[in-house]
Image 1 (tube, rainbow, N blue to C red):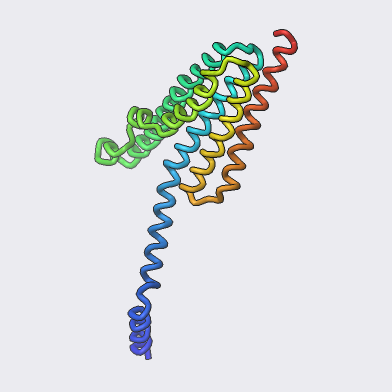
Image 2: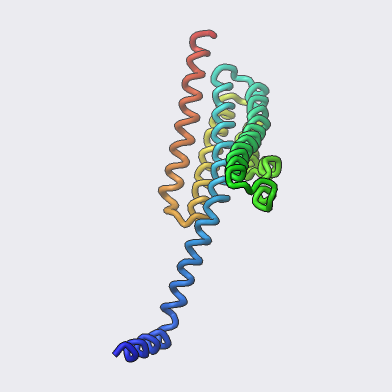
Length: 212
């Protein structure tokens, strides 16, 4: 009876090879999505952070001092400071991770072996930080938008509109690459960015109103 069951199972597998192939493809697809999520998260986070923080910084400065030069200089300062901060953060994070893993190797008596050589390099991690590179790309958007406009009201409006459109584009790209709902992803990114810009502009406007 067991032999017959085995034969029936073999025949069923032979008649339905697509079922087995489908299982393998599904697992490979899941693995690809999981691997893609790491660099996708770093790139989207960096670009979104660069765009929102730089645009908010520029709008905040313009709320106090309606000078084109001050607004552009503040954006350029954000463009330089952001990637440096993210790269240093990546370096410190990898250093901490490396210290913990080396301490574990000491406890296991494996210090100096292949395991230690395989540990990540903090300097390489900082130099290859996807978040820092993406931050620069995102920060350039509001900076270029404001660099060629003289009028104060038009300059503020253009920075806000261009930043909103770029946020929607970043959210759409992230949703498509990550196979997530596009509308929900775009709405989340746009609403968060607008909130950050509005809060910064509103609070800094109070300083101008109070004469500080």
